[in-house]
Length: 66
Image (cartoon, rainbow, N blue to C red; front, top):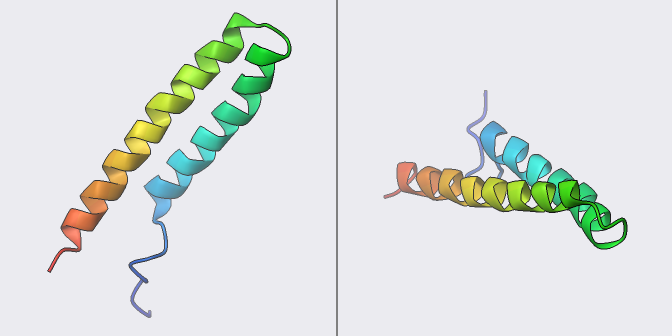
């Protein structure tokens, strides 16, 4: 099996990125167009998911260090 490229996202990064995009893609239209409070909950959740994505990415960078 060939070694993984350090530039390709791993599974946790993909899951967090997709969940973040989905939360924002559904949350913002619900919040801004429909005026739904649930939309703002999704936007807030998207922010936490984005933060988690950053943490996972930084951990991966530190693991693959010099």
